[in-house]
Image (tube, rainbow, N blue to C red):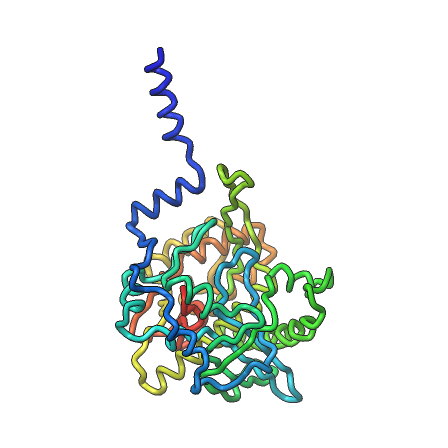
Amino acid sequence: MPKRNRKKKKLVDRNQYTLNSIIENKIKENHIRTDFPKKINFDSKYSKLIKSKVHSNMTHIPFVTIDGDDSKDFDDAVYALPLKDKINIMVAIADVSFFVKENDFIDLEAKKRANSFYFPNKVIPMLPDFLSSDLCSLVPNKSRLCIIVNSYIDYEGKLISYEIIRGVIKSKGRLTYSQVENYLNKLKYPEDDNYSKIIKNLKCAYLSLKKMSIKRGKIDLNLEEVKIESSKNKAFFSFSKNKHLFSEKIIEELMIFANNIVATFFFSKKIKSIYRNHEKPNDEKILKLRKSFKLLNIEIKNNKLKTKKDFLKILSLGNNPYFKLIKESILRSQSKAFYHYKNIGHFGLALKNYTHFTSPIR
C-alpha cells in the first residue's frame, strides 16, 4: 500500500505543470546560458566611461520612455516637437557599442547567447545585468549615453533632414502604454501632468508618420496578441488576448522611422551592416491564400495577389464578417523576415532599407 502511494505521488508531481516548471524545462532543453562567467563583472572603468567627451549634452531635451507595464529593460526614448512647417523627432537608443567593444569578453559572451530571452516571468539577458538593467537602461532622471536619430519631417510625414549623433540624455519619465492610452482617451493623466504636452507632441508626430506609411503601402494587420499571465500563487497561468493600443502604435511608428533612417544611412554610405529583410510571399503561399479567399467568397481581380496594393485592397474589407480570419490568412501567407548583410528591403513595411537599430540589448 505505501508503495502504491509513493508511485501515485510521483506521477502527480510529474504532471503538475506550472509556468515556472515549463520555462525551466525549456531553458534546459535549449541549453540557454543563464549565468555569466566570473570575469564579466562590473569594473570601475565603466563609471569613468559615463563621463564621455564624444557625447553631446542633450539632458535638456524632455525624452520619455514608453513601454509595457511589465517591461524589464528601457533601451529607447522618444521626443517630438511640432514647429511651424515641420516636426522635430528624436529617437534615442542606449549606446551599447560605447561599453561593449568588438571581441571583448562581453561581446564574445553575447555572441554565444545571440539575443535576450523574454519569458512571462523572467528575462535571461544577452548582456550582463550592470549593462542591461543599469548603464544601458534609460531609467528616469539618470544620465545615459545614447545614439540619437535627430530628424525633421513635414506634416505629411516626408523626411526633410536627419543626423545621427552621440548624446547624453536624462529621461523625464518612465511611462507605460496604459498610462499614455488613458491620457489619449482623456481618462486621466499620467502621474505628472508635465507629460501631457510631451504625449500630445508624440501623437502629432505619429499622425504625420502614419500618413507616409499609408502612402507607401505599409501592410498593417493590427492583430490581437496572446499574452501569458501567471496567477498570484505562480502555480497556474492563463492566456489573454490584447488588442494593439494607440500608444503602442505611436512607439512602433517611431521605431520603424528610426530604423529606416539608420538602414538608409548604412546603405548609402556602403557601411557593412546587418539588415532586416522581408520578401514578398512566394507563389505557393499565394496559391493557398487565393483558395482560402475563394472559400470566403472574396473576389480577386485578374486572379492577382502579388503587390502590396492587392493586399491593402483586401484589408480594406473591414465590414466583412470574416475580416479577422482574412487578416490571419494574410499573416500566414507572409514570408519569414530574416537578417542578412545583403539588403533586399522589407515587403510588409514597404521600405527599401530596414534594420533593428532600436533593439541594442535584445
